[in-house]
Image (cartoon, rainbow, N blue to C red; front, side, top):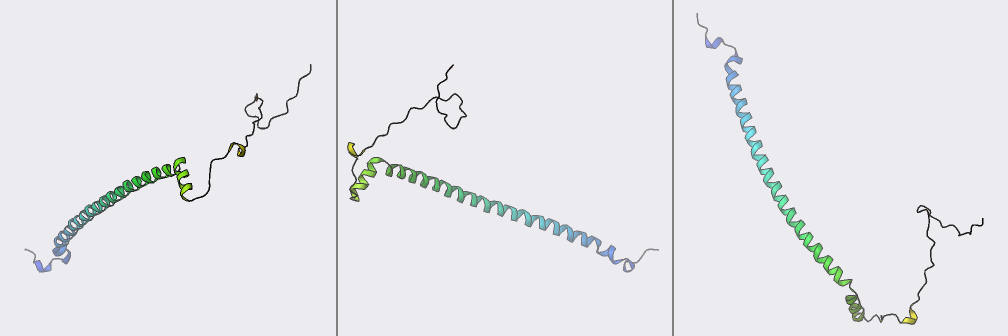
Length: 124
C-alpha cells in the first residue's frame, strides 16, 4: 500500500527547499563578495595613481628647491644679497688675515696608536 504524503516527516518535505535556498545564498554571497573585491581593487588603484602623482610633484618641488638653494649658496648671490641689505661686508684685507703654521708631525709606526709619544734618542 502506498504511503500518504501527509504522513511524511516535515524534514523530508522541506529538505530540498532548504538546500536550494542555501545554494542561492552561497552563490549570491559569492557574487556580492566578487563585486566588493573588484570595487576595492579599483579604489586602491585610484589611490595608487593619486599618490604616484603626488610623489612626482614632490620630487619636482624637491629638485627645484635644491637648485634654488645651490644658487643662493653661490658666492656671487651671497655678495649680491649682502650689498642689497647694506650690511657693510667687504673682503678681508691682508692685514686682517692671520695664518697659522701647522707643526710637522712624526710618522707613526703603529697606525692604532692614538697618542703620540715624545721622541727620544736611542743610545747604545
